[in-house]
Length: 205
Image 1 (cartoon, rainbow, N blue to C red):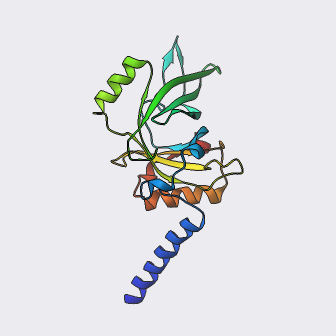
Image 2: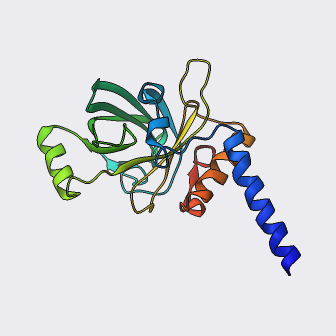
Image 3: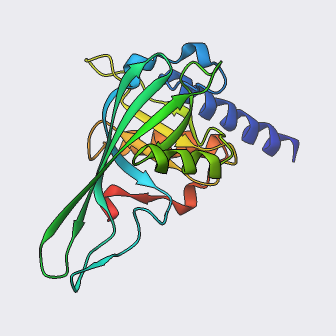
């Protein structure tokens, strides 16, 4: 039994070490290791846990549309305290039509987090105010893990959740990733105690 336990512990240590070897960064453990500029730009919603905003199937003018697919988010730094967000979503109609949705938002950087915790709200000023008030002005966007950087100096993937870790967004710079990258992301999310079993991947939508 002791041998089995030692073997299991060794496997766990090797697994965690391999994540660091791949260059995975954990901003909530070390916020100073996070580089805001490397996070900016366009991201694709590679995987997510189901949510009411993207997985609903709206009916418009008698045409039913699918859940969102090939969603993307673009981040730009407005000032040292604020990040602008543009979310874009595609929906396919039952009649073969393609609908494009987009919404702009603002993300306030939580003091002392070095950009790793954000209060995100979408729509106009009034809509953003009520969204933030509803969440009691808490940070609802925590960057938990980051992949290594690409040739442009941008992080290649990101795992986002909230304080309670009850949802996941996996963002990548490309719509699709290599199998080994997917495995690295899933292993990292499991290490963080996130609900990996509920993830819906882009290639499965």
